[in-house]
Image 1 (tube, one colour):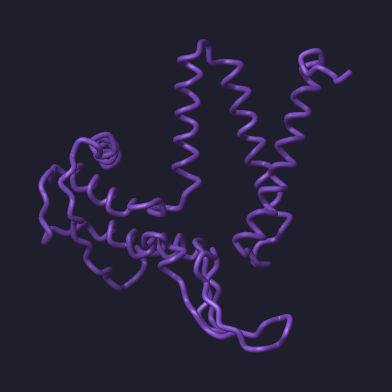
Image 2 (tube, one colour):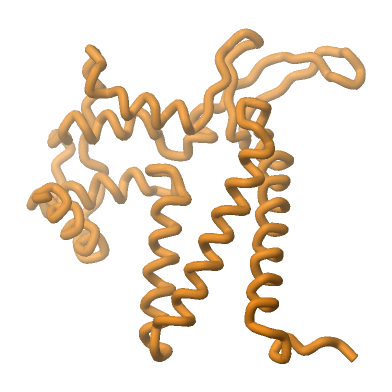
Length: 221
């Protein structure tokens, strides 16, 4: 007869949940290394522990929702908030489809510009953001070259499309999204001026109003 989880002590059930979350973290880390080609710039142990810790935090959040949120509506609201928070921090800036244009349109509305003007530009901090995080970073940084097949030793053409790590030439520095963060965070000590960014062609207003209100409030703070 299979053991019914409902009959197990609460501590045992939560222990099994923690174990499952840790296993998922290990599998997640393995998926990252295999499918995204991460190399030894980051210790595999750090990646595994980081993924496992993240899933344990998700488990803790689930416990808090179940323990303290009363009623279906309250639990649903908390889950929506947590999912939105996860979405905001799990994706690097401007990397979801069309996010750069949506961000720029929302920014324009937040400053009171509801029309479209191709000659109107944005402040330098916005230009620095677009420079450091071009849309679809993985594809925007794609390079091609000729390498050596490790199995046959023959020359073989390659490209970096779809890989999270980029390298230009055999001796070039390996780049990742972390370099974009470093570039953006150092913009205040750079002497160069970013290329101006103009408004995208968009006349939509209503879909971007919530984000525009949030941007306006953030600037006030």
